[in-house]
Every structure is written in structure tokens, then in C-alpha cells.
Image (tube, rainbow, N blue to C red; front, side):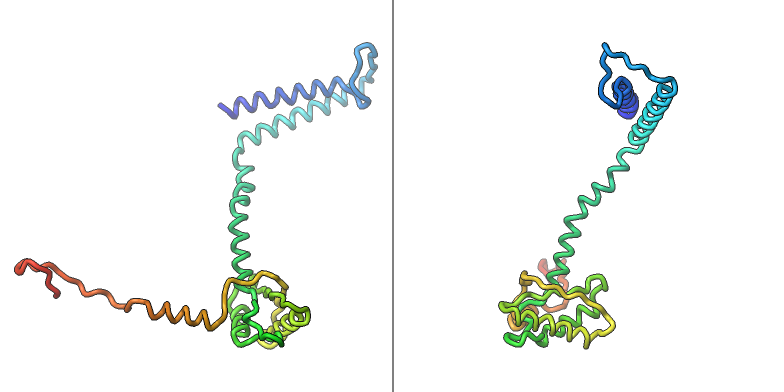
Length: 212
């Protein structure tokens, strides 16, 4: 019923607008005291144009009413997916960020952990996620040394790849390797034994729990 009402009201609105437009010329509204003579050819052409516009508007409104809500679903879906896509990109960016703990203090060269992390990015990650982000150092010389070290390691590990390297000021949320190693060892030592518990069955003779 709503589609029928919209299909009836919308052409009426369009027709009213066309009637108002017919009463106007290119130079403004027509005054009642100043009649304007219109040539038959011009009047016929104007009527044809207005009727074509009315028919096109009517068909468009009917098509939109019959197809609703299909034309509006795609923008709504993109609006919902956009935050999740942004969060995924930020997570990959943090994963591929080389912070201060992955470089030597003064030379700006990648240490062992940094080289292993770079090898993992070049060989394990999807190709469209192989992007490197280097945290800027306190001095420009150290930042340039970090970038040069990353490019050198990329050329040695995978010379056939072209991996972009970007600068960033956001430190990743991880600490020194020794601290992380201690946390992982403590976690592994607190895990329970990988064995299923021994089942117990109630004893119908002794009235207590017996292990079988």
C-alpha cells in the first residue's frame, strides 16, 4: 500500500512542478499584465520536453519504489564494514612496525630479533600486507641508518621483492625480547599437564566413590 501511495503522490508532485515551470520563461515568471506570444513550434517543443520529463520522473519514482531497499543496501553495508576494515589495517600496521628494541642503540642497524621479524614478514605474510613501518629515532642520522639497514636486509633476504618502507612515530605495544621471553616461559610453566583426569565411578557396594 505504501508503494501505491508513493507512486500516486510522487507523479502529482512532479506534475505540479512542471505546471509551475510551464508558467515561466527563460527570463523569469510571466506577468499577467504582459501576455507573451509563443510560436506554435516553440509551444509544441516545450510541451514535448515537459511531457518527456514528467514520464521520466514517473518511471524513476516507480522503479525506486519497487526496488526498495535494494539501492540503499550497499552504502549501508560499506558503512558497517568500514570500522572493522580500519581496525584490521591498524593491527597489521602495528604487527609490521619496527620499534626501538629491534635496532642497535647508536648504529641503527637491525639486531637479531629485527632480522628474524623482517624475514617472517617477507616470507609468511600475504603479499598485500608486506609493508614495513620504522619508528623514527631521536636524531635524523639514526632514522636514516634504520631505514638503510631495513632496505639492506630486504635486498639480502628477498631481492626479487619490492617492499615499501614508511616512517612512523607510533611505538608498537611490545617490550624488550628478554622480558617477553620471561613472560612466555612463566606462562608455559604454569600450564597444567596435558592429561585427562582419571574418571571416578560411584560404588554401589561400599556406598562411596571408587576409582576403576
